[in-house]
Image 1 (cartoon, rainbow, N blue to C red):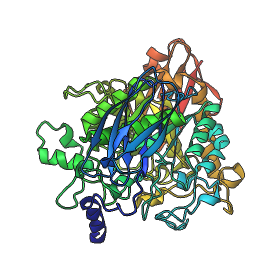
Image 2: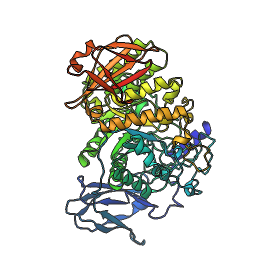
Image 3: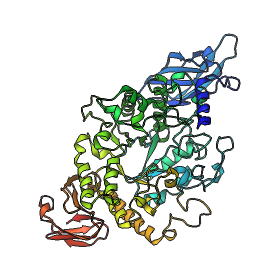
Image 4: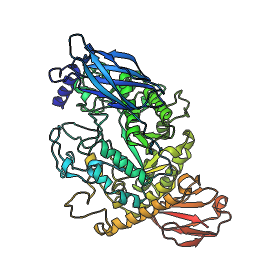
Length: 615
């Protein structure tokens, strides 16, 4: 630990350590932009050996050089451009001059705007499938090892080394995903993570405008998004505002000391969200939460720095326009500067009105979660402009039901109570509901590998309000507890040449795996075909005797969902539900297709969720 800390301190204390090797113009980001954007302001970050000693000039109709900013490190310039509506697609020279020195020039391109599908937004009509790209499928062995990068070890037997999964592997399995009923992919971050170790997860970016070369390249990422759009599917990009990797190119040559949060010694966040909204909080606790580092190799960004804000915001707009991204998932949302995140959200909505994004809020308690969502619904005096969150409260409620720590009555009541608190949100249907992800134990293991309970939870997730999200392999009973996290990030068997089994095919799956796969596929595609299960209104009844009943309904259809949390079969009298079943006499089980009468009682097997379309 001490050795790692010393490396980090070295990065922070030396801001011009690379002059000898740095070319006169190392890079300009963003490397190109587009004409006709809603926002005319563009700030370029220019990096090169003592580039601040030079003057900047340009001539192009509709583009004005507004201001050039110098910072502590003479290797940087921040160049403000005004790109008006009069600017046409084309190229112009950015000229960097210095008396007595040869001129440096850069041909900057303004492209025509991308009018293909993009920024569609993710809604409760979608079913999201989360993939850790390194662990899903290897479609191109040639990029498994990139010798010029920091980590060149490939070992599928290790939790911490690269395994070789890539974007081509995902493209190769889009038929599988579409057949399963998936409408949207969320990939763990795919930006380059050129870190010395454990770089596979993607949350320690060293580049903001480049896809990790071990996954492919920018063009392949765009191809994946295009292929999704051809199928009527969507792409979510995972963003990390809060931190970068310790070997991010700006960390190797810091623009200024306040580029990241500095501490006298290495200081982690306290990982406590409460000081952010606690009316009695100490400022020291709040500062520790938002300014402390996430880990030794993840420096915490100083989002009070306007150059940091522009750098991140513009890179996110760039990926939408370049690759056609449809929505964003915002990592470690609560650790960010709230003012910046509001500003960021407003900028995104202004440029792309249909775009949606949701923030990771790994917290316990509905108010703790809702306080981060837009609308100032809890009267805390601040509107985040955040449309939705990762709904951990749904997960905790379902976990209580299946993990054996509570009685069935308490478990189903937990679900009821959680949903009854939806009044604290501006719109709870924008929340993403899930059973597991890359940071959590596989839910099949949480159920103690109980298939009926697992199917019960899946059915609940796919029939209640919100945007459901599956974690890769959930459909084939991938298991393990997150102790450590690498155990829940195993390879999808069949994604690598030479795998002895192929879980992408029915022949490669066990009988139990096919049972769950077929069940989930049936339910997911049924949800896809029935608007009532996507956007229908929700009515729930107070649970009784360990049975929880709710309805999804619209003008065309009514679906009755019965969740039996008991370990024994139950019989449910239907007279109580007259308000919703009046006029109906029969129900068809969406999974089995069987019809039954609902005029008297309904039988529900143990640990089962029945999904019944009323006739």
